[in-house]
Amino acid sequence: MLERTNGHGQAPREVEAEVLRRYAHGAKKREAALCCPAKSRYEKDLLKKLPKEIVEKDYGCGDPSRWVNAGDTVVDLGSGSGKACYILAQKVGRKGRVTGVDFNPAMLELARKYQRPLAKRFGFRNVEFKRARIQDLALDLERAEAWLAEHPASNLDGWNAFEAECERLRQEAPAVPDDFADVVVSNCVLNLVQPRDKERLFGELFRVLKKGGRAVISDVVCDEEPTAATLADPELWSGCIAGAFREEKFLQMFEAAGFHGIEILERQEQPWQVVDGVEYRSMTVRAFKGKQGPCYECLQAVVYRGPFSHVFDDDGHRYPRGVRMAVCEKTFGLLTDPHGPYAGQFIGIEPHTPVAVAHAYDCSGDRVRDPRETKGRDFKETREGEAPACCSGPGSKCC
Image (cartoon, rainbow, N blue to C red; front, side, top):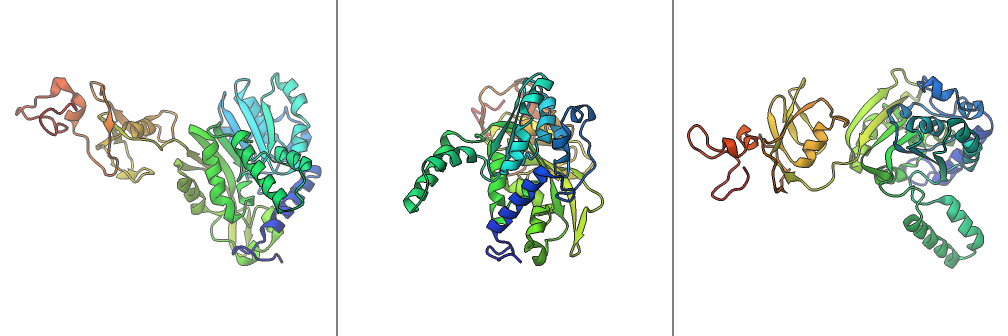
């Protein structure tokens, strides 16, 4: 049994050591039960170009590469043997870029082994691999280790100097910088992170994405909380069981980190395993970055098409079916983006005359947009000579 040190039934150092050991072994010899198997939907013409070794020693529960496009800059968390990275390399093409991140030296060695031959086969080289913890994507561990080799820490002062160097590396030479990726993908890796680090992990997902970027994450989820016995078993941690997210909490973690447009793309119908009566299955979730920022009034409105009587967005705004609701410029863009998560669900209504000077907009409540607000100067006079609803008094410049 593991020593219980953090309230979740597992000792973090022992768990991390077991994960390292088991995945290092998996880099040398195929371990069929290392992760939740799922039906592979990888495009066959992309898969057939890869060496058998990295295909066989890949461990995952989904295929997030299906939601990546040509030209994208992609970060793959827990890149392992490099299989997904080399598939992504072909999908994003010569103008795209792929960065694989892994903590395990044995897996990185396997993935890097094929960089040159595959670049020659593809006709371009757009893949790199970094050693980092996925909950600390800024710290390049290979650079940190190189510094430590030259400046061994034999006392507390030495350790403090090493920590200062790590912080310098995070700031000046991050493994993955801020606002770097169009897409962050991961395939059955987030569950290997200890509970105490998971909030930080989702913050890192958010940090490295560009505004408008998206995370596409396949991972193992459970329908109930894992039992104490499960949490105390290091083999179940390395086997993607003990660290599984409860289904609804998985989505809540994205929301808490600031993502919007969060949706379940795939959910395995039958459980992969049942341990102590708890069901474990794979699920793929997509979430977007970009709802943060100031709100401006541009006299725009959106109409929710249905079929539900009303829906709420991630900021709690209510949209009744068929009603033109006033929204700020930012929300209008999010809800009507043809490539965004809400594509096709809302009708966007622009003002007849664009607003010359946009003013701050209060998004704290819901408001119906009067049709006369969007019609502009040509419709200023009504049938009874009253001012449009948007004009609050003499001198108003809203129309």
